Length: 238
Image 1: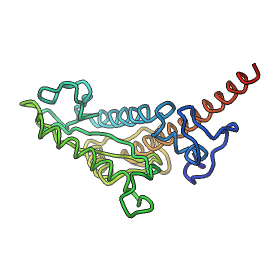
Image 2: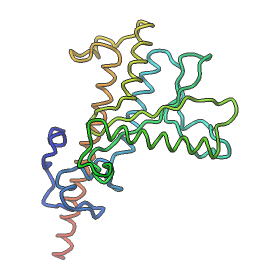
Image 3: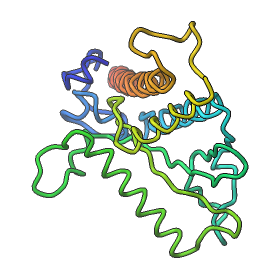
């Protein structure tokens, strides 16, 4: 995890600079190929689902109504479309809030805006949130939501480093206010010196989930590449 954050060559490549998907070069050597771009070794879906699960637990903790967006048929004529990962509301009289969760990869340099050499802080998350908002706007224009299923759409995006964008900050401020109003906090078994309130503790959990699964994706990719090298060598001997 430390080497990933420092963008230093990762340990354990096993003498191979080529991924089993065929990619090669610095992206493999430094590990960031496996953050989200590799179709065979990336944990991007697992990482996304882990974040959604923790957010769901967080809202249930403060007593909000929670449903999974994947389980709801919201879009006219297109029951296959799932624009929300998580739907929550404070009570039955409130409008549903539909969160579309993402984890942006700031190492994907081809996504850097024209004329820029690198992402600014939070820029990758902001661009991903903008892309998600544009997709939802297209769904509304083309199909629309079903009658009686009004939802306030909110894209919230974290980054592969465990960081987060402005929309996540707004979400956490809202949930912290709800927790304080209801006197909900984390138990003594969960409290840490750097997370002394409800939202800070959950933010640490989410950040650790993201970092852990990003690092595991790199390890998984390295092991697969090393195994492929050994198998190729054995085949050559035979």
